[in-house]
Image 1 (cartoon, rainbow, N blue to C red):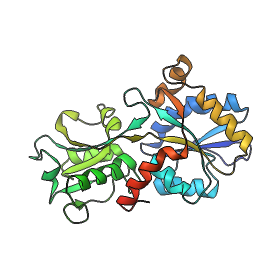
Image 2 (image 1 turned 90 degrees about the vertical axis):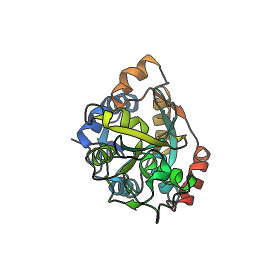
Image 3 (image 1 turned 120 degrees about the vertical axis):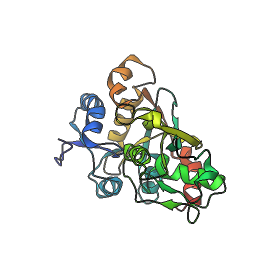
Image 4 (image 1 turned 90 degrees about the horizontal axis):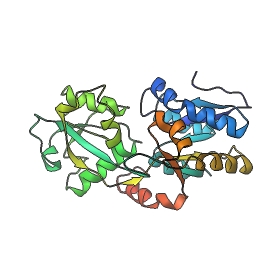
Length: 266
């Protein structure tokens, strides 16, 4: 259901920030669109976790990747990945940020109140669910190595929210947009945001070295055709909560590389 190994297929790998079934349904229309545009079957691959996604790219089992910018710069450090486009969303456009959340009744009112608290994050390779919050803590004078207790990674953004609501954690770091989409899963009235991170480039699509240059160009052109707020893009990308794509270059991620180095993630 979530991918195949036939050589005739182009394998589209999605970083598993949410559940596999949910992500499959979100990106199925895009895979079908690319299949038509490319004239080759584009299948969806959703690895079990962030590490499995990176291994899939490195091993050649993922031809086109869609991942957070931290994963992209980590992989590109050792691989000749080709950035294709950056995702654009309804509110944030081609930028996104993270938030730090707590329960309303926690007594925590700002970042400084997190000293001595138990904090939970998505994954060490999560941009908005780890890297961005770590930078925010650092800017606020909190040493995440000794001033807070970091709990085992939640692996998914919705698990962070649930851990905070259920008092398994005092605070959690996650992507702002994902929090807003969780109203059907968690009681958001029990949560408040005590900190916002800086904005960084949104998730890129990128091609692996396995694809020939002509194929990479064709995929890029097909994605760029889905322009923000265009009717075709709306039909195909609405399930994925995207509004379109815009061109991007590797240099657009330079500031993020510097941020990742600051917290030892690059």
